[in-house]
Image (cartoon, rainbow, N blue to C red):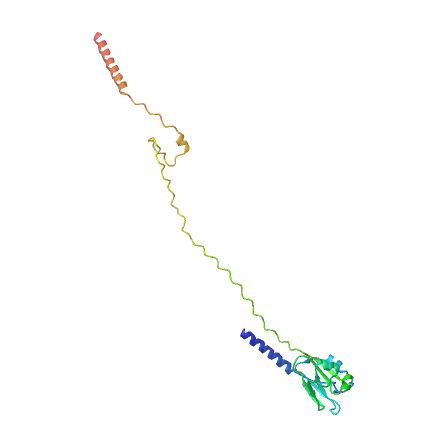
Length: 220
């Protein structure tokens, strides 16, 4: 902020210096000077010129019959010579325009003033450049995306299916990987085993047959 104020002050001083370096001296009434009924009216003379701060108005007149009064607007309009802000006399005066705005001058001779020997000049104001506004604050940067955390590699070990519990009744568990067709296939019929009574009958028949054979051999 302090640097901006300093820059603004330097700019204003620079502009004032430029204006003062271009200040000029303006002859009121040109060749006719400050007198009654000049060739070019004072209002026309002031209207075609541009007055700047530090310009100088030069009044040349007959000091025996005339003078220059610096007045306010009301006294200017009414040609009031009794309450001047500043009085210039001596026949040769310079008045420096030190500030912008309207400046009013009339002759000290009231009769001549009422006949038009007066002039008002409008001095241009110095327009100092306003200090530059600070640049807008940069927009905050968006947060960086979070890096994905690498998880452990997927396991390649096959999952083992635990064997199903044996059903009640003593039947053997179904093997892993059996298909529905295997489960629906009926078990093979058991081979009938020889009972003790059948074996006894066989032995008895064999003995009987042997006795019959021996008996027949004896008869023959």
